[in-house]
Length: 348
Image (tube, rainbow, N blue to C red; front, side, top):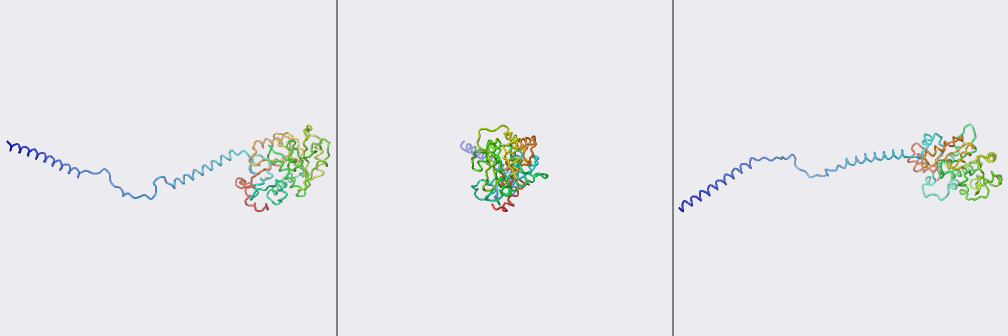
């Protein structure tokens, strides 16, 4: 019995062993037959540069976008520009001749800005670019009429604070320094800017001459620095009605022409005041001033139309307060665009 039991156990163990052995053989055979789903295309290499982003493409793309944005900004700025910047703008947009440009004094200097006023600088630095601009303007004005001599010049603008009185003051000094006997008449009753420029406060002036309470000889003020004469306005609360349209104004202009070669009339701005439209037709020509890149074109056009409606002879437009350094970068085709090329020609 014991023998039979041992034989049965041995037989069972042998069967189990043979089963494991067969299974091992089958597994070993299957592993040899398996194939991988992937294959090696090339051996991996250590990268020397980042694969992303591509710096060259990004740089070229950024450059292209920058150029496009700059061009778009320039076009937009040009479209939104409401002022007048160059001589081409004057003649193309306004339809009148361009007579000259009066620079911003500080823009004509390389060093520290001068403490002198524009009028004093013009006298002390006669060979400067600033002084030359007024000689150029004087030449354009005096030769603006081919068939007649220009002697009475009305100076006006569209709006206040466009440098009108300073320009007239300097122009009068420039003409006097050139040898022409010149008188500047302050016709702006509200501002009386000539008094400020001369540093005086007269008790008698233009109003008193026209009303007959003072003579011309009693009211004229001689500028010792240039030899020009000025007819200022005294501070007065009373102003006769239609002062500049009177016969007294006509007689005064006739008298002034008999004593002086050139008569400059410093008028008020056209849009807010009616007086320039009364004075301008009495002058041989009218000089219209426009502040560079600031005075709106529509305001200029409206003021010029008002002057033409009263048959004033507008000789042309002069730009004032021109930044010559900016103009040499901006105003392509304008004389100021070449300022860097000829600026060393001037003494100051």
